[in-house]
Image 1 (cartoon, rainbow, N blue to C red):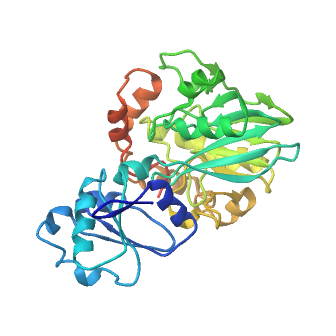
Image 2: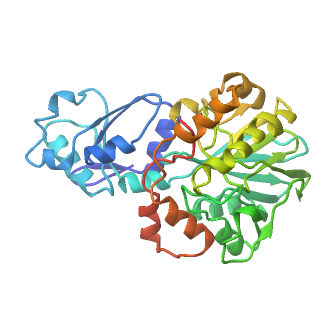
Image 3: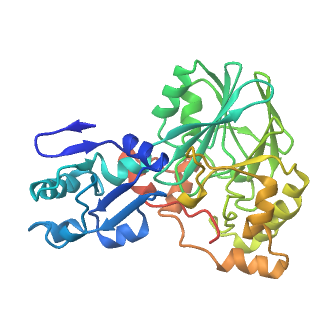
Length: 378
């Protein structure tokens, strides 16, 4: 944390650590109410209220009674500017522990938190990078100094720093599918670190760049670890899962902890719903119940484990996940084609970016990704 002359600040990384550690937090979100209702900071012990910046220009009297006197107050806005002004107003009103969150929700959306998931039985480690502000999950497998990245986000610096600090030689970069809710950094990371980039070919018909194809049953060796591809269509026609050393199942956007993947983001819901059911109710049923499921997204903070990671055994999900327990096929079809949240923000432009058809600049990419992920059936 740093202290300015008027107000203290806290970084998105420091705030994420507090949320992951389940600290009691009070947050004032100064964005417009529509933006707040669409997407906000969440945590198991987070209390958050909304008071738009323009309502506080003349002072904090409208919310003064709602502010705690005995704990820290964290103020956030879209980019970090308005929150400084509001935090100053609160401090001037006599509240002593007031912080403005640096970079606002944009910085919160981009923070990646690496968390160790566990060891590999043949030697090595698997890490989950939690994008806590957007619910995206990506993975680094490290075995005997060789590595593979799966479902990389566009913010490359956290991955590069982690890989270099751990002296890992990145060999493979794989995407489980063509993403529609966030921009993949996989191809750029592969180029920067001299690795091979892989994508399921059925999702890559319209891509404008070269890639290596992922096929059902393909195996990728890093160190003493084997990554096996399992074709699992339904969210997209090319969606592919990965089994790591018969311990971990990376499901992409097919299966989540509390839900299942939606089949409509390429406009193919009616065509792909049968594939989705076959993957979830037949293909995954053939896999071992003790595989630890590691999805590419999570829907809410309730899915987070005590250490901040997102995971659950496959057998447990078959007992507890509603999407895996719809016995009537017609009811399943209705659920995954009608019971859907709004489309992800800018999803068509994100798909085009991931195909290489358009090349938005960094600020445009940030704007395209603003908001929550919406890859799951409700």
